[in-house]
Image 1 (cartoon, rainbow, N blue to C red):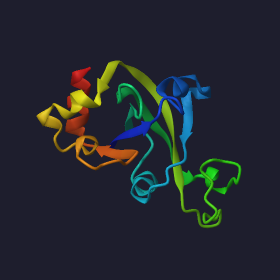
Image 2 (spheres, one colour):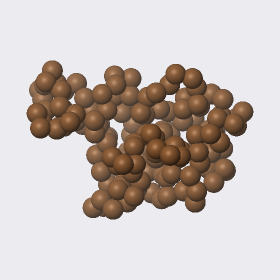
Image 3 (spheres, helix red, strand yellow):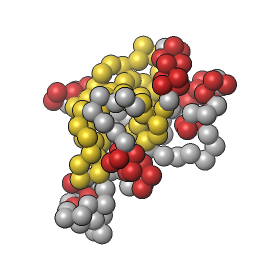
Length: 152
């Protein structure tokens, strides 16, 4: 099993939105970074655990846990000219962009803030706290996962 952190702006799609979806499941669309796409396409597997991270908000941080419920498939929003994630260069016969489905597991007892994560020397190698890393999807090691859960 792999562990991940996936960022979303709570005003666009937050942990509460995921919890309220039918089956508490939603596709994770709109990823338009090749490195993040490759992780979703090539590495994410059903059952992988995901920290749900709220970004670009008053208190950025980890707010919940989800799991991958469907492995990668073509991100259909790339083919829809009326969708904000439309990519005219993407071809349904050979898609450029992919997505996975994620399912709500639970909310954390509290938000574990970015500020707090940055203060923990045990997380110095966590991609989220490294300078200049702005990916919306990033791997988390099993040790980092367990340490972060211990902060809850």
